[in-house]
Image (cartoon, rainbow over all chains, first blue to last red):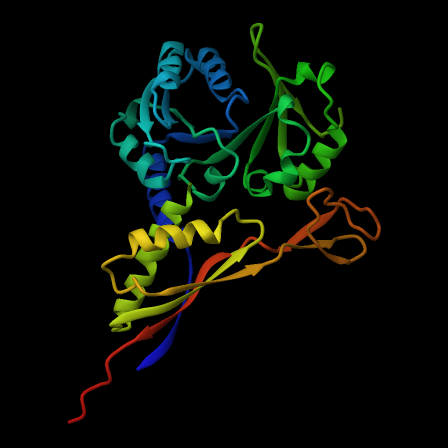
Length: 212
Length: 120
C-alpha cells in the first residue's frame, strides 16, 4: 500500500536542538558565547587575538577554534591569553552544534566568562548551522569586494554584528561602500556595524549608521 | 561540502518519520529549498546513494521544490524576484525591502510503502 505522509520538519532541526542545549549549558554557567564567522583571510584570528589581549585582565576567555586540519589558530589564541580547545573538523567546511557540545565538555565553564568560537573560514556553510552561542559576528574585509552581501545573502542575513576589517585599504582598492551598505541594510536592517584596522596595534570603531 | 551533513540529516529525519508510520520502504522524499539557502541538489543526490545504502530509504527518489526568493518593497508594495546585482526596488528604488520567500529548507512529505494489514 502506497501512502504519502506529511513531515514538515526543518532539515537542520536536529542541529538546532543540540544548539539549544548548548545555549542552556552556557546560560547555566553564566558564559556569554560569540560565534565568529568570515571568509578565509578576512582577519578573524587577528580580531580574536586583539580582543583577547584587550580583555584578558578583566574577563576569563575560552576559545573554541574550528579548523579543517591544523591547530595553528588555537595556538595563537592561547598565546594571547585564552583557554583554547581546537576542533579539527577533518575537512568539513563548518562547525556544527554537536562539535561545540563536545568541545564545551573539555572546558571548565565555571572558570570562563566569555566564550569565543572561531568558525571555519567560509561564507556559505556556517550560516546554516546554529551553535548555541548568543551572538553571531561576521568579519568582512575590504579586499573581498563590495559584492559579498549579494553573493552570500544567507550569511549577511543571519548575523548580529558586522565588523568591516582592513578599512584602511579603501584607499587602494576599488570598493563601492554605498553598494555594500545597501545590500547589508536590506538583508539585515539596523545591523550593528564596526570598522577595524588590526595591523599596527589594532583599532576598532563603531559605525552608528553606515554613513561613512 | 556541507551537503554531506545535510544529506545525513535528511536521512535521519525521513527514516525516523517513516518508521513511526510503519513503513517498509520510503519511495520518495519531497524537499523544499528556498533560493537563499545555499544547498545543491546534485550533491545531496550524490551523497544519498552513499549514505542511504542498506536503509529503507535506499531506493527513494528525492524531489526538490525550489522556491524562488521574493522581495517586497516596504514603500510602494511592489513584489519582485531577487536580482543578485541590486536589491533595490525596481519600481521606486527604495532600499526598504522585506524578504518574503526564499529562506525555506524543510522536508515536506514522504511517499512510503507499507504492507497491507492482514485480513482476519
